[in-house]
Image (tube, rainbow, N blue to C red; front, top):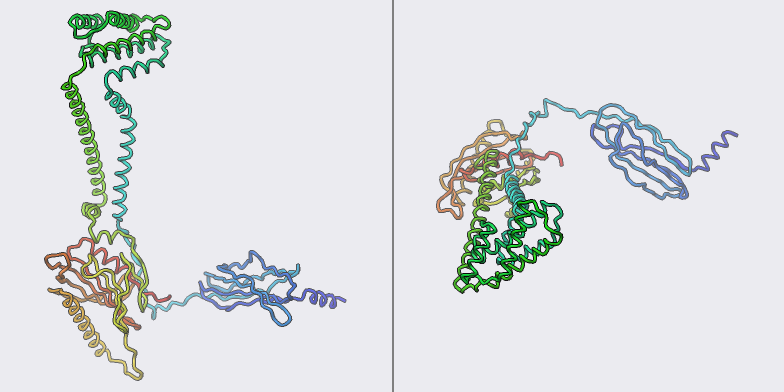
Length: 535
């Protein structure tokens, strides 16, 4: 009965679960593929775990469920990409799959993770690369100086607007004619309602200042420095002489206001209710009648006043311009002094003046791969492929001989070895190498001479790049007729020759000998040169 029940359940469930990996032996950091496959009919509901547990392996990728129809059933496949970074023997844990509500557990698998063998006798070891010094970016410096100056100027503008806005409003107000200015000030007193003795004092001070200033500006009377009695005597004298035709009542009204103001300011008196508005109207009447009593100015007087006003405005603008330029000059000097103290004189000067190679040095460099055998190199500008004859060398360049910095990257191919050819002896190999170097030097000289270069001096030495690549360095100086220059320019040139089994690489750099940043750019280019061994 028990056996029959088991068979019946299996027939009802009607599914089978299989597990597989593409390899049971892997190296550290390699990827293996783990596959779960369920064999069931088309009506089955298959559910794989949303969060599968594969510890100590890590899941780096998983694929959607793949369904394949066979003759009498369907295959549901789920694949995972796993990785492990520690060596040893590890069990892949079993996984659970749900089919029509029934759970099925897969088998566990044993995976061997091996270390990567390192043969120090056959494989060359290299020293740890030194810490690379990052140079100051003077493009950012120049932008910082400009933005700093703009920020300081903006701050000074805000301070000026805040502290001098009132003064400027007063100056604009003073530009109005004396009569209009006096009327505006009297209208402003209409909204003042004093209640304390100190407020009355301030009110009458403003009120009398209006009429005194107007009399001094228009009637040419020293009203601001005169006492009340002195001012009234002057007005009486002007009336009797006929220079100022004022009514007796007008002078009497002014006397009343001035005496009331003296009592309020000096005797701590408080005026009667409503008298302040009456006194303001009396002062306004004095101003209006004084204007009517004044003789009309002659054209000569009007012209003199206008010329005087223009002269004052010109002096004021000149003074403002002077202080603005002086402030700007001080800011520029302080900013340049701070920048020079931090970065040095020549870097700051060359950055601001747009020195050609400092732009190349400070711009964001481009790291890219070129040619065969493939190499990776960082350059100020991307190397563009140069068209050559069919079957010729593969060439990439940035700039030309007239540029501030010339980079030329050439890939040459070696002829295939003939079968049965005997390997040359050590002596023959050395002789061939010397002959090859001499041929290369001759080719370089011929190329320079064909471009018009003279006084070519050449040296060569064997070097090892920062990435550990052996190379032949051919270097020296030459005089080249650059465009736009009257005389030939003394230049440094460096050609690095790399010899590989797949072919050769020639990397040539050329820049002016007196260039302050040429050697820095050369070093940075060569330090970045690296052979790509695995793609």
